[in-house]
Image 1 (cartoon, rainbow, N blue to C red):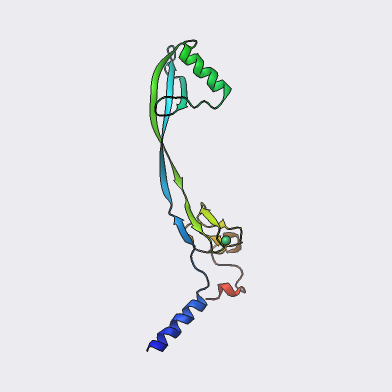
Image 2: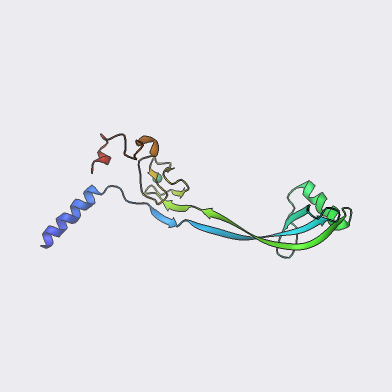
Length: 151
Ligand SMILES: [Zn+2]
């Protein structure tokens, strides 16, 4: 009985040549807080300026025009109302990250085709798949002669 189950295990290992990649990070939504120091025109309350800043209101001015506009808002050169620091939340989708057998890490953005530099292709769940351009319209691999497709 024991001998028999060992044989089954060996057979399984020999035929199961594709192992799913190790998932290092599952897909998830990320959130980040952002702060802007906002000003609006006194004669046009629907328009104004918003300068990216830290929580305490220190501006993070990345360009010369932004610096000039910020100075003009602070100094009173522009006729604007200071609305102070306004907090907002931004969110975005982060795809899963998997580790290929070759050791490379791969972000799985595409539902079907995520290519590793070693030539393997993975779906968004990290399963090794035949690239969709090598499959017919029903998802069956075109190359049935390839022994990897014999099941
Ligand atoms: Zn690889």
